[in-house]
Length: 274
Ligand SMILES: Nc1ncnc2c1ncn2[C@@H]1O[C@H](COP(=O)(O)OP(=O)(O)O)[C@@H](O)[C@H]1O
Ligand SMILES: [Mg+2]
Image (spheres, rainbow, N blue to C red):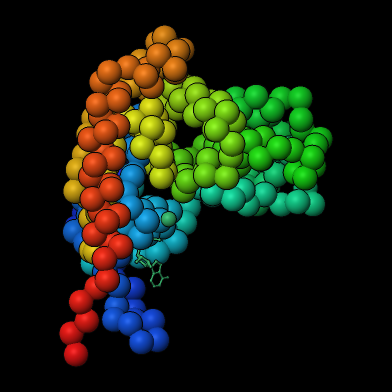
């Protein structure tokens, strides 16, 4: 499949989780429609419990929709595949393998010859700035470096799409900004589809070429924005000026208003009909 064909479509997706013990079933996603093209950086934002992870799990193929369909390059998504790389919130690296071995692991599973997979892994480790850390063990790395390995590993099978579920949530503010900039460089360099979940409005605005805002009960996409702050960064390399610009701040306040409204609504007790 060539990259240009590898468009992703979510059509009328619903996800209902079955009832837990005493509660009713949970409609986690309702009528979600989404088109992602190569080179799109889609960021999902929304109150806790609005279905962001559920949507990512559909894209990853970890979960099937109760209704609707997902297509990648015109073919239904029926399970996980090497055409989609996932970076988790808490890195899911193998502690008994070093940085290089972790990065080439997917290719090893695919049976790619050692010299070939080393060459590919080396290229991706360089892309995330870890060219001097091949032999390091995972516990010897900072949290930010561990996430870099996670990104390199996800890229190594050359997926059409990179899926990230709050990958920066555990990082300190400075490291977070560095990895944000790194991600934009990787995005520009690879021109892959990115789907990125975050809790941070600032992060969402800075990274996304498209922002989807989701709302809980039932989880659905309520707002979509096309953004160009990421392009401005790639042109100017000046994140601080962009994040403190008037239009960035205005946008941030608009989105915060939407999400705070949802959080407040979610905090109110539900009416129980008996
Ligand atoms: N495996 C599951 N079984 C039942 N309910 C679930 C399951 N996973 C998530 N949920 C519920 O579905 C809703 C959406 O969850 P999730 O997709 O994790 O939201 P988010 O990532 O936006 O916080 C929540 O109400 C959550 O409690
Ligand atoms: Mg989540």
